[in-house]
Amino acid sequence: MGELLADHTTLRLGGPARHWFTHTDPAAWPDLARTVRREPGRPFTLGGGSNTLGGDTGYDGTVLRMATRGITCRHTGPGTVEVNVQAGEPLAGLVAFTVAEQLSGIEYLSGIPGTVGAAPVQNTGAYGQEIADVLTRITAYDWRTGHTLDLPPAACGFGYRTSVFKARPGRLTILTLTLRLARSERAAPVGYRHLADHLAVPLRTRPPLAEAAAAVLEHRSARGLLLPETGDDSRQAGSVFLNPPVTPEQAAAVRAAGGPLHRDRDNLLRTSAGWLLEHTGHQPGQELQPGIHTSRRRTLTLTARAGATANGFTAALATMADRVHAATGIRLHPEPVHI
Image 1: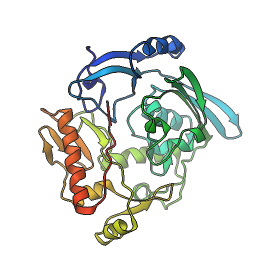
Image 2: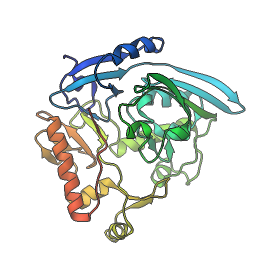
Image 3: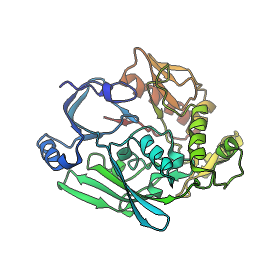
Image 4: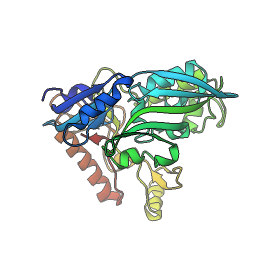
């Protein structure tokens, strides 16, 4: 026992893990996997810890931290480039690389924390782009069989903030991603009104790639969606609830109260978790448990300050979800993953 989960998560909460391994060398994976398999149970795979809550008493098991780095490119045809990325590469670094290389396809994911390997787990997306849109292959290790697999997107069960990796926790560890991006000086068409207004362009415009990525960062910052390095909101895990699906009756009630509705890519009607929280009385900067506050910038983000505990964070999530359910009948589902 020794390595603290708090030292490897953005909430900076969590006690020690019983066993800890860090994967840095792709060539050493077979030996490392054999070593990890000797420990009881399957490991918890940790990336950047930006969507993770460690328990106060620690983790009585094995944590495998993915810290491999590397990005390589291969031209695959007119105007297309295949990009292979190690799982430990920061997602923000990959986006910056692709923008600098004039490769379009993930520019609207600028500013999202975490590692590349974590992105497929919840099918990370923003402003109309999702990581699943550009994936051609995921290389993953199956802890049940002891084999390394090459998975096509169709085998990954992608949906709204979900995948087979999330549905079967502990079964697969992602090692590399392969993306197909378009060689272009222009970004994908702007599909969100707020971003189009920020860029001062009409919807469906294709702004210059670097300009689009910079605008996303500015827009995310204005909405309190960037992870600050210092200050009261620096210890956080981003949005704490998924936008929930609603029944036609619930949708009618949301609409009557002036709330937003949208359809996801599976044509499922959803409303805004942030709007529900504020509609039921929660506000930015509110203390919910000792040391646990809503962000000063937005209600949908919980932050940890002095005196915070993981148990308190979990209790705050329950309080918020229970209030929404009691008032609206709509159930909120937490985003942070518990170790």
